[in-house]
Length: 91
Image (cartoon, rainbow, N blue to C red; front, side, top):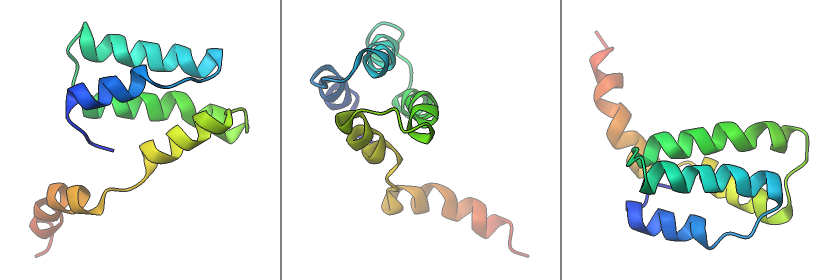
């Protein structure tokens, strides 16, 4: 779910989730806008925040949809990042 930073902040600001989920989203918005943290780290943190709720089946339908989009693999980006590492380990 890698997007340009402004687009991702807008997406987060337009979410309407339950109180617990919204707390995590608001924290992510703060990290991106005020602390200027890297988007990939913020996404990783969001996944870590949402995962326990998902495992306990305590996500709202909107929260589950958002979490699913966060963890959806991006094969094009993933392969381009990891292929040099994988090839470097082959002898």
